[in-house]
Image 1: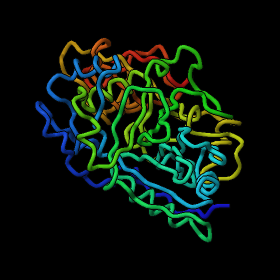
Image 2: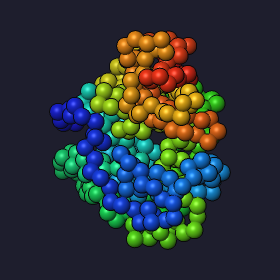
Image 3: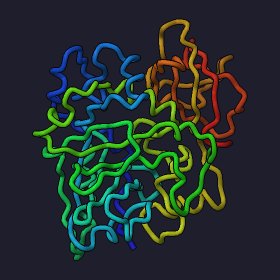
Image 4: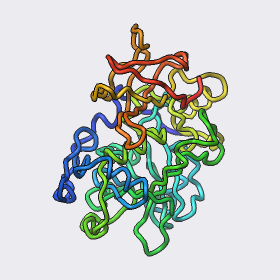
Length: 357
């Protein structure tokens, strides 16, 4: 049984503090990102080339603005299991998974990248979210043998196009399980031929003082390149593709982050009710955008039918892919016609189903 706290009407990541400036921004051509990814490079002068190098497995991405939280103590995994959406009891060392912290009403508050090294559970968070995660976890400790710490100032995250767990003696790494499915769960999109299957990805945690040495002379890709590959893989991101009303079903996040029969945790009632009895009120879609005008919609911009009318949803992530051109993710009303051509202002958008209506 968990203690419910009042639901904050703001998205958790809207409260994130700016990240410290990465030393890799001193590399030639580096242009700093803005918004949630401030503090690291958006690109190093040639975003499309960086995408190609990343897709070929040759580049790495500075994600040192991401948060890092550790949980130690003998009760750490069973405790996190009781609080969050994924089955974590008995998680083997160096086996990656992900879990969600939900509000009492089942809305996504934080997404945690989880890997345990046998003594410590490492949690990766969105930029600026680590203090909030630590504060909430500390409030739920009670008499259990656990210690929670924000280690963001000590550890930097580096993204690599690799699907391999770390081994003892290497820096701890979280391997993205997307698109799964993982464990006893459900999918709201395709299980076969999912575009996410073509995106190997892991996040390596290195001591911040060793960041430049770890990267070495490898080619660097910016967040624009990483985000383009993420969008093409239909991979949702907390605080970007979610808002204060998002439930996991709407963005097909049950497939890797939710265990359907693990017992009680905060927000479980909504997960079970919508899965068993209802349909999510909104759904994630992938968009091919009309790029003929060389202008893309802003993230958060309204989506309507191409012929006009009231808003059906909003654009959440926008990218330029080196092969597919302008692409986006959006969240729209579930009953929107799957064949309808959508638009954001003057920019038309053809939708591809991610979550089935």
